Length: 483
Image 1 (spheres, rainbow, N blue to C red):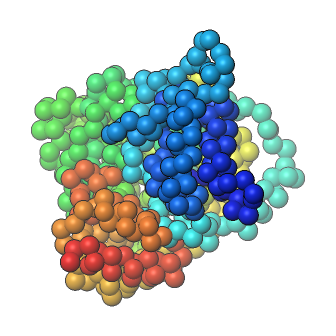
Image 2 (image 1 turned 135 degrees about the vertical axis):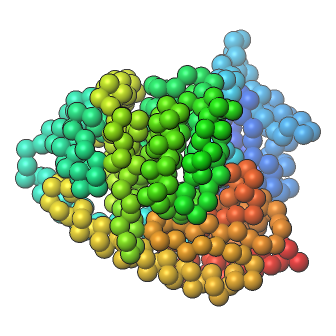
Image 3 (image 1 turned 120 degrees about the vertical axis):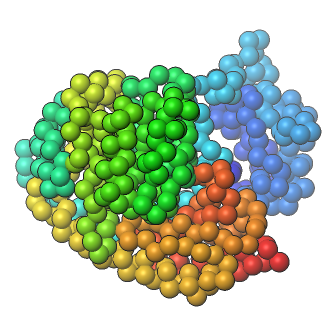
């Protein structure tokens, strides 16, 4: 999806097509649109610039005539030259070719569209998996930073594993949920996503297979695939990942490790039972299959505490445990942690130092203050209540507008409702039509290419009026498409 802050000035004496031509020339000459760059389709550019398509056609024709761009049937219009190249003997590098051969794969196309559309003014984000700005404790956050201004804190780089006072606070916190971990076995990371990236490059061989739930948030990322890994999904039921299939899948796929989100799973919202957690750990121990436990949603329970983490039952150092403040407090702090055997944590810390030389020291000190002051516990109580209210509101709206066209389960925590649409339809068409009407969806096939009839509905981000408006209009779109 192409977006830009620039628009042609319709009150200017300079013709619109000339303004567009000059804009594109500037992009090319500045090196922003390099040789090989694929220009947006004419219709897309016309819509973005709020002009007739014929105006864009005229601009493209002039650029083609000047030798800057070239249009080929079936492959679109691409930059083939730049203004400096027309004057120089040696052409500049084709950066597009470098992009194509880079190790890290680009995001999935739908994910790229979602990431860009999230910043369209007024868009209703029905699938966004983060706290609403109204749920982020901005007043408390200001108080935290105010308190820090009176304290002696460091602003330089921290030691490889992260700020010791923060690791001590996290060690104390982990003890309250059944995990015994000394500060030396904890690594501070910039969110759980960085933890996955460190694991992918630091602990796995190219060609390794990673087992995970089917569907799974992991399928929406290319972090493991970019490191040469393959993902294989194991089916879920109401108790969580089907642990009895571990031996079969490990043998067939020669799996290197298993990744799971046991608490309020992303995207299904499933809460793994205590019995299933123990069974999963037992089976992984029998198969000598290391396990990554991504537990970033665990504190977002509504009526009953989440079961103890799988890591709490781990006596053999089999589990790498991931936690974060991004889902429960603020994504902007970028504070998460990895808990595991010390040699593994030290190795990952060494890799982290090679990549970013440590997470923000200021964010780490703020996190220390959140834990030590007791404000984090206070905030969690408040955010649970608000999320529960949002869940109940969303379920009421779904019952009102989707009872005849979809089915779903009632989540008991987290952010998500895994909605299965009953009419058979094109998810791509639904995504595009909804987006054209200002509604952004997270289609199920982002998390499992076979989940064509599913949507991840989030009650955590959009305002309640927007949730109602968005779902009401979405139900009409579904019914229109399937007529």
